[in-house]
Amino acid sequence: MTKRSFQLAAAAVEAVRPALDALRAELEVPGDFPPEALAEADRAAARTRSQAEDATDLELVTIDPPGSKDLDQALHLMRDGEGYVVHYAIADPASFVTPGGALDAALHERGMTFYGPDGRVSLHPKVLSEAAASLLPGQERPSCLWTIRLDAAGEIVDAGVRRARVRSREQLTYEQVQERVDGGTAGEMLALLPVIGTLRQEVERARGGVSLAIPEQEVEKANGGYRLVYRSTLEVEEWNAQISLLTGIAAAQIMRKKRVGILRTLEPADPRDMKRLRRAAHGLGIEWPDGATYGDVIHGLDASEPAHAAFFNEATSLFRGASYLAFDGDLPPKSAHSAIAAEYAHVTAPLRRLVDRYGLEVCLAATAEEDVPEWVHEALPGLPKTMMRSSQRASAYERECVDLIEAIVLSGREGESFTGVVVDLDEPRNGQQGKPGRPTGTVVLADPAVRARVEGDELPLGERTQVRLVSAEPATRTVLFALS
Image (cartoon, rainbow, N blue to C red):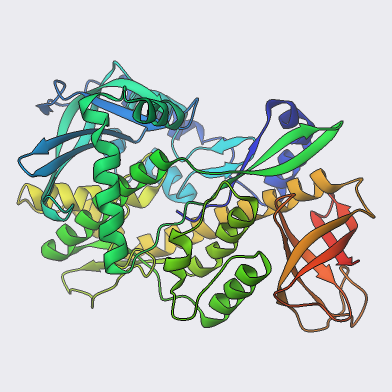
């Protein structure tokens, strides 16, 4: 939801791969799986699954970025009188992973998939994540099949999940679905995605939630070098995200009723971050009327505009500090995720996040009115720490990747001037960036898409200003600007 990522053009991948390999080694990003874990995964992939309900007649489709193979979700939408039914099949890695085994231990060590600009370091071995457990088209797969009924306004009427065998009919990209919707060729089922997605967006706004359409930063070849640009999200990406959010909200409700589970939580934004965001809006020429909430401002922006895209990236600072809350028996106080403005649980990406496997098991047991498996009870107390450790490692990797790519793209352009906005100031300090005691801060550029350090005697906080590139050092992953 708040991931800031890069997409490298094919020509740029090989140029930066050595630096990225060195970075992965430095940050101890997970490498190969232990042999015993791989062997266990191979055996699990070849094993015949126990019989589950046959739902292969459900005409599901997946919607993912081009080339994706680790397909966690497949959906089917239908009308139900004046309301709607969302069928959401989620990959079922628990059908392949033996609790306490070598593979399970390796998954707990990783915690999640690590994303870099040249690819991903997967949570699961590829024999599972990109083959036996992935909801690939035309293949019968075990799944956790959600059925969520909505009323005419998009509010949840009831929800449940059960194990079922499914077969996705088609693997679609966001662009393909957007083209079909815009061109009127989506068909009856997919034509409901903008209907239900828009209803859920309205429900979200009514409860005070905000979803960020964070633009992806792309590296393109230009004038013998590379340039950074923003790729705005498509409407279908936001509608599709609402289906995932819907499921996570339904899961949290089921967990609370069962008195067992693990929630994704986020405290309200730090007032300092909100002030920083207001300064960014002012400098980027974005109106923030008195009395308007940050959500009001977000809803009026278009991520295809570079200044608006830069603002979306700055807004990710409001989501720092997200954590997990596990409970077993004793109900916690209401623990909303402040950005979603509702209680919420991670259950829709089990191939990429460890915690989702456990959340799904709780919801499966609750729907079937059965006891939660003992291996879930045993793991719950330690899951928040496991996930936070993994999240910190993954975030550090992604952050350093951003810094590296920015330094590579700007290297050789020292002395050039750019238009930027100073969004934050630091206390004067000694350090390798900036002269001793000279004021430094953070500057945001819309074009190129860069956020970096800036130095100057009187930095104009919150104002659009000209800055000069002082240095861009790929070896240290640092970029420094100064007032022009």
